[in-house]
Image (tube, rainbow, N blue to C red; front, side, top):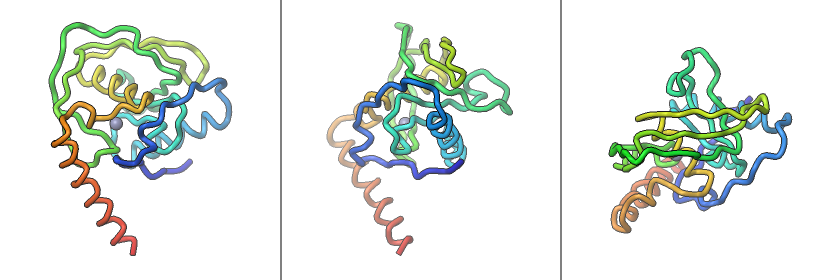
Length: 176
Ligand SMILES: [Zn+2]
């Protein structure tokens, strides 16, 4: 369908809470396709609808990371819920398409289980470990408006803000 511009922090739209999807209709399938195109254009592992400016409860994850064949389509998570996380934690650097070139160390559960609806309307559960658990929890955070910068202190947040505002200015200059 279309590659849509990724919303970059500190854009306030990233703080909205996403709303549940009531029916899998043509507009939901179109949103899925835009998410796929936008994620692949940016080489992302996952992306939430809010990141392309659509506050509906959906994110997608790249197929290989989700345990599918690399040639399979990305996995859609509609109205997802985190139903279980391990007490065992992992501490690793994390990136986000809404924070280009920023990496932040985030402590998260090592394993996580998510229940969601697929594009076929069926409910499924998926358990991820390591990077997959991290990705599931990260994308799920987007649906409540939670972001990477919520894991750092105010000083570091200010630094990241400056850096991203500079990127934005440079892009505006390029655009004339
Ligand atoms: Zn993100």
